[in-house]
Length: 204
Image (cartoon, rainbow, N blue to C red):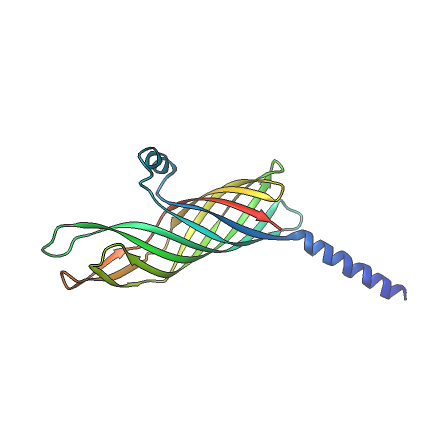
């Protein structure tokens, strides 16, 4: 009987420990297609010319025992735009907006400090779901769906609410191919995007 009672207490204690080590929630925010924070500031002052988008998703945070470190995997839907310049043979160069939707899976390692602050870094695995251009002459977009980036960031948590700022750098080479109907030719262009990400999260 004593062994049964001991096993019950061990099970309850283990369940409570696991629950305290794993947390989760939802998140959403704004994405700025830009190489640096200074570019975002300059674009905002000149009328927000940076290509903006949004993201929404869910996250888990797994606290690593005996340290202030944690592992934070996320599953995020992102919609973003990128300006592309192409120059068909015999025609003047044109600029168009390349719009795309993708799934992001960041796997971040972070550290908590000052009780409310944290910093993190890690790879972000991305898969493009759909893409399109804002002019009719470009059709049949065929892009490399999978790419890898690197995220660096920091944030604060006030109760169940959190806010963080991230910089994402594209690592892998990705290209897309489209058919220019006017010139009847295939054109390749790089679809990599560096971005500044502002996020708001809620912890359950």
